[in-house]
Amino acid sequence: MSKTRIAFIGAGNMAASLIGGLRAKGLDAAHIRASAPGAETRARVSAEHGIEVFADNAQAIEGADVVVLAVKPQMMKAVCETIRPSLKPHQLVVSIAAGITCASMNNWLGEQPIVRCMPNTPALLRQGVSGLYATADVTAEQRQQAEELLSAVGIALWLNEEQQLDAVTAVSGSGPAYFFLLIEAMTAAGVKLGLPADIAAQLTVQTALGAAHMAVASDVDAAELRRRVTSPAGTTEAAIKSFQAGGFEALVEKALGAAAHRSAEMAEQLGR
Ligand SMILES: NC(=O)C1=CN([C@@H]2O[C@H](COP(=O)(O)OP(=O)(O)OC[C@H]3O[C@@H](n4cnc5c(N)ncnc54)[C@H](OP(=O)(O)O)[C@@H]3O)[C@@H](O)[C@H]2O)C=CC1
Ligand SMILES: O=C(O)[C@@H]1CCC=N1
Image (cartoon, rainbow, N blue to C red):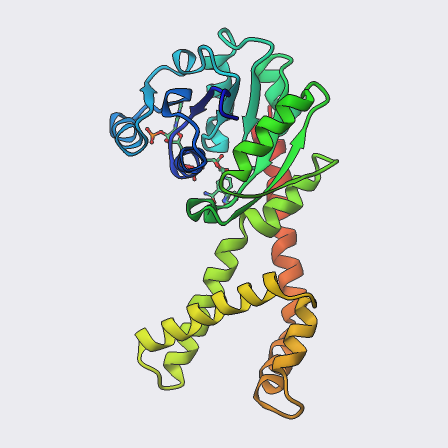
């Protein structure tokens, strides 16, 4: 990784997280470039990370080993078209865009080694998790470069089938939002039960953090950890019974199904 040259197309939230992770892992700022249309974005990312920035995407990818596409899915086609004439066959393209397939990117870019990934926003704190899929053109060295890029901001997990990225998007890509929703709902319920809002929020967030740490550190699964909190005929049992009577598991399955479906639908709508 120390010699890899990386160009980011798009310098928003996710790109800035990845750049921060790479810098923290010791990648020289001179090996990283980024492009974005907004002068403010360019000034911010350059000031924060000391990297060279460009308004022109084609200029940004000059000399790069890895080109990271970190723009919104709706921008991917247009962005691919801006870099296609300058892209060299050996340059690895890494896309983090939701719902844009490798086949679409190959149509827009020409035949090119591609790694398609789905990271998530805890990458900002280097606590992210990503799913990665590589096309057949990707070499072993390029797989390693992609893995090092994503593991600079968390855990990187390889998938054998591209379609599984729809499920990764549903579970972990969008996942932080589900936990935030639960935090919002538990805080509001705590307030309804008589707690001051700041106390309800602290109790909720620290409980989420503690539970996540336990789930990571424990050698038993989440179901067993839950059983250990749930005393027979106690308070937790009353709450869990209420969740389950409301169809909690089925609702979670339905929600994640909707996210995965939307990912596949975006591939269909935006991939042309
Ligand atoms: N947010 C999330 O939770 C996750 C997002 N993703 C994926 O990551 C990608 C980026 O998302 P995110 O970082 O949140 O988005 P942001 O909106 O924060 O960043 C998008 C960036 O793209 C730049 N951009 C827009 N048009 C162009 C162009 N023509 N050429 C070059 N750059 C351009 C924008 O520039 P400017 O700032 O100047 O407008 C901005 O810097 C998306 O595809 C999303 O699906 C993946 C996993 C999780
Ligand atoms: O909501 C979205 O479409 C993006 C992809 C995963 C998280 N945010």
